[in-house]
Each structure stands twice: as C-alpha cells, then as structure tokens.
Image (cartoon, rainbow, N blue to C red):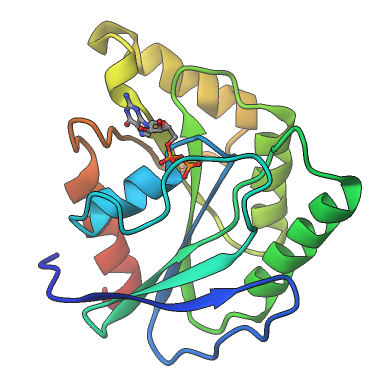
Length: 195
Ligand code: GDP
C-alpha cells in the first residue's frame, strides 16, 4: 500500500456517536502494551502518529485513521489495565461491542497477542467476543524480534492452542522493530477491503 495521506479523522469516547463511514474499515484490538500503536504507526509509515506509550488509565477512545481517503484503520481501546475501575471496564466493553455491532463497513478484525506469552484470560475473552459478533479475527503475534527465530513456530502453536482458534485462522508474526509481517498485513487488509 502506498500511503499518500493519513488523517486521524474521528476520536470517539464512551458516549460519542460513532461515525457512519462510507469506506471500508479494519479494526485492531489487543491488550494495553501489546504493541498496537506501534503496529498502526508501522502500517502508516509513521514513527509516532498513533499514540504510543501505555499510561494506565489513558483515555479510552476509538480512533479512526483515514488512509488515502480509501479506507480506515480503526484503533480500538486497549484492554487489561490493572488499575481501571469496574465501571471503566464495563464502559470499555460496551464501547467496543457497540462498534462491532454497528459498523456497516468493518471488513476485518485483527487481534494482537504478544508472541512471547500465553494468551491471557482477557485475550481469550476478547477472541471469543469478536467471534460471537460474527467476525473471524486474524491474529497478529507482536514483538517477533523478542524471540529466537527457532522458537517462532512453537510460540505460534502456543497462541493457537491458548485461544482455541477456529481451524484456518491466520496468525501473522509481526515486529514493529524489523517491520517483518508488515507487507503480509497490508496485503490482507487490501484483500478484505477491495478484493
Ligand atoms: P499499545 O499499548 O498496544 O499501543 O503498545 P505500544 O505500541 O505503545 O508499545 C508498547 C511498548 O512495546 C513500547 O515500549 C514499544 O516500543 C514496545 N514495542 C511495541 N512493538 C514492539 C516490537 O515489535 N518489538 C519490540 N522489541 N518492542 C515493541
């Protein structure tokens, strides 16, 4: 994908009305600190356009990045902050659910999982949730550069088993440090949006 323009067009808070877009959307979910902002920046060829650094309790918003006036990358709020209240967790859940339910343009959901670790209870919940909303998420196994190449297949298997992935679900190892996986993710996005 040749990036000609990017624009953080809409930022939605808990009570915001979600935008009705006429272009395809792909959404990214994952627990805080998994590398979601870094991935989105890598896809946009930017260093720090998407907010990096997970400060606990940072504002939970859904951000819509308009790419080339052709499609939207949708950054869903990160989950798993230890220090947020039950009320905030509930609001977070409702906001994501509302989006997954109401978007008419959502073509694909990417769920980010740290390649080093077994999926957490929150990851499992998020996976089941996305599936229940009728989407088959693509898994992006982040921070690929943090493990040895010889360990990659073992860790991918761990993620597949940990999430009990529907057979055939894609798992794409990715590193924002080396950009490995970037082209494959863009190819998938373009196929889902325009294929
Ligand atoms: P977010 O909370 O999911 O948006 O995560 P960030 O993108 O802010 O990343 C959290 C931390 O992990 C930051 O310190 C990043 O520099 C680091 N990080 C993210 N992706 C990678 C990666 O692919 N490799 C390495 N080594 N570090 C990463």
